[in-house]
Length: 117
Image (tube, rainbow, N blue to C red; front, top):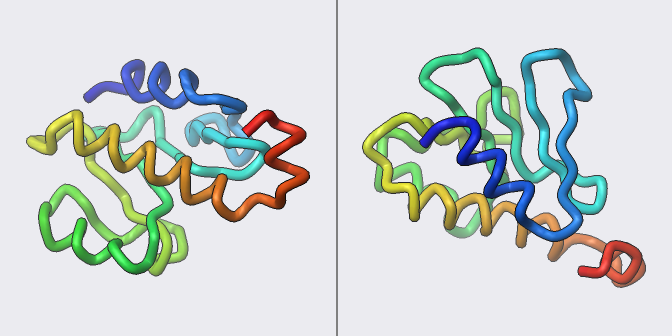
């Protein structure tokens, strides 16, 4: 899966923005101002950091060597996914959806209403 496919998928979700808040290389996707995905645009193979429920995070790491503890992130809540791999696109899309939903689930009712979520 390439960077454009990831970008298009993330941006198709409601209330998502993209930016480079840290440097010119780390593309960040936020929902309602909260990060749910990060990717280095120059690193190969592409590696995508995604938030994940701590109850299932290790299952994903055990299923595939392409899912590792989050690089430079809280390893109890984030995974790093190698997207240019044998991991099926459907699984990557599921993890993006899960990350997005995890962030939304932590928003206040007011924030959800403000962003139409």
